Image 1 (spheres, rainbow, N blue to C red):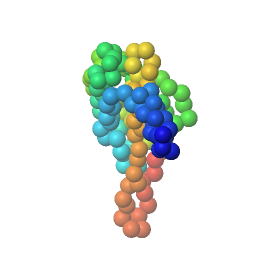
Image 2: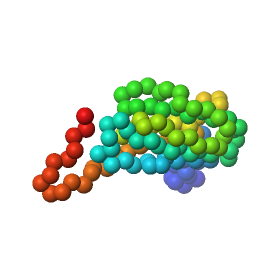
Image 3: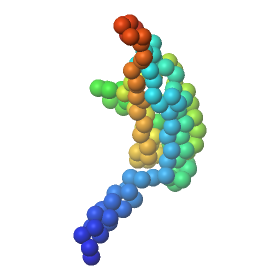
Image 4: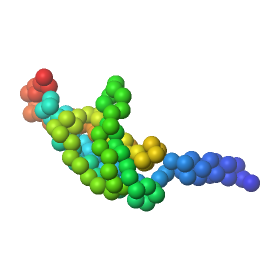
Length: 123
């Protein structure tokens, strides 16, 4: 056995434990930092059929907060949030048994402002 074999075996076993074939997509996944304080509507799409589950649930987590149930349904589907999507909002796709299948987090990028102009305030 070579020195690489244990590392490859470890990576393979970790993947078997946590590399389920599930897809979770956010649109948009990246928001401009100047999004109004109320937030943005995020389209969330998922497909966990290849992960061997018939039903899923999605939870959301805000930075500094705990997870909250958001929706549940068939292994493949989509849903829009209300206007509350913002930086750091994390969506977690779970099997009906509670196993995490995928996780995605909304991010922001700085808004471009003309040179010398002040960025809009976020009140």
